[in-house]
Length: 120
Length: 109
Image 1: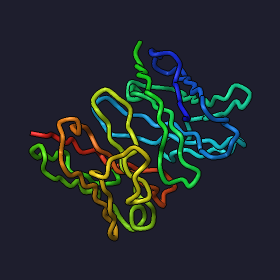
Image 2: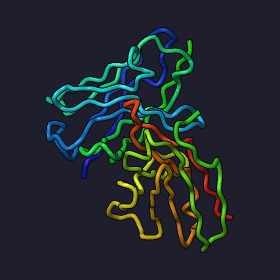
Image 3: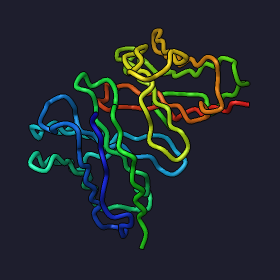
């Protein structure tokens, strides 16, 4: 059973870089069965897809966030990471990592999510 | 403003049936599979339906999905208080993004 767990700072200052890591267990990130993804949910709001990365390093981002986002993968640690630069209060959200099925049609599994607050 | 349109809320009594709609366009639902997610309060979303109408292992057959043209529907029969949650639809869009609906809050009266 594939499980995901997010980790990283819960508080980031405005204009700084938000950095999160997702650790994958129960499967090798290099297995090729998933596109490893990040999704966020603003407080009380809906879901927003941020982007995904394949184990090969090929990545794809939401066009609305593309200039600010980098997703990377570390196959040796079975982890993938998110960096969001120049954050503002509008980036305060619960950030989820998730596996996008190899068919690209659904997200499963999901991590439990981690709340990141942007505040000075 | 979400690309996919869902009703903000629906409600029904225990044991009854409810449907949740998800409306899109030819650039998203019309040309791609739809998935549905259940988000219980304070938890991460959970896959309920994939590829329009398929249920993952462990999801009861009280949950069903369908798609017609540019709209999709989630159906839940035999409502239980434990079904109270937010429900989201999702799919790909020709803008090359994954898009979600704004979510529907289900209340079991």
